[in-house]
Image (cartoon, rainbow, N blue to C red; front, side):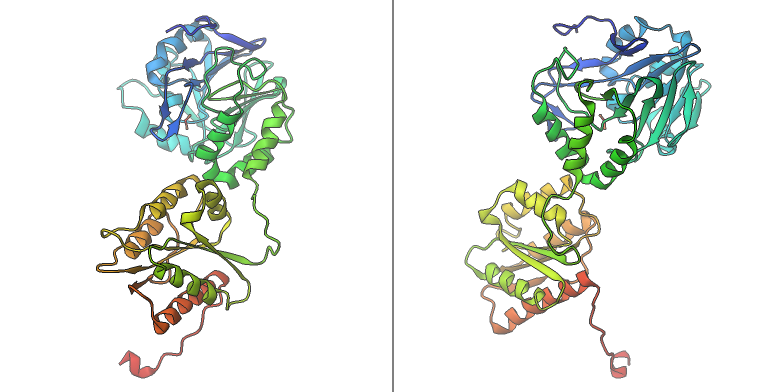
Length: 423
Ligand code: FEO
């Protein structure tokens, strides 16, 4: 479908370098969870050298016709020597099987992890498979006067991802990183509407869980001469491309102050119907504070906002969640926070659960299961207390806090085992 302001032909980025992607203005959610208020684009690029033509990424399968029409406007299939796959997610590899049929002579350059994943993506056709060439940082392809150099940038946001740098033109084809779901036929960042929100929203929902990998990638890219960033979605960043690189560095850098960097941080979240789980939380926090080197924070989920909690969670070393059990479940504000954990990297953090209950007390086990599912460590069994905690039970809460703090600092108590216990 033609989109207003854009012809069916390729769009020139630089002499011999073209955008041959597709616009999807009516998409309203991407991968189910990501809102796309004005759609998205699937960006594919063609680079022409004196001895070869490269196609970098393709488009979602349902937009293949548009892609091939644009591609044919700048290259014949028998000229294509090189196909680069920066990322295999179907929004970029959907037209690949057909492209391989039309340009069977092309060599396919991709990361080694992508090569492993490709089998699951491409159904066997019975035809001779193309030549796959796994590449990593500094490997390059000569197109005749034009050089494609690869950068190994995994987990942005799949294990397979890589970036491809067109050396002579200073153009980086970056895959999803630096992209956003923002559909605008004017294509270039100095022409399109205000896409700042989409750019930041995309980072927060796609790249944020992989911020260490983002920083690694930014470090690889920063030394490059950069005239244009060509991401796989959204505007082509030709005006002040380095601003977007700097913004990614800012976004991926830890954002909370930690005056004492050597301290471990434990954040205790709770919500309480009658004050019982709150008393448990306070006792747990007090117990954790007995251990030097642990900074403890206490937050009532009833009085906060998701965005701030997400920041706290991202920076914390340990997380304890307190919930009463209502109707055999943890309460919704706790689940809301637990569901938001998919947008940050929590793998390996310490997790724990506690809560007061009236009849059955399922909340604690359910929270622990969720924490384990998110790959947090849950080394200490959670604490369930029936209704009002008495003095002894509050002592148990303090002990739980102390144990968690010891696990955080690595200062576990040595336990002397009586030989009679082993009998
Ligand atoms: Fe745009 Fe991860 O696919």
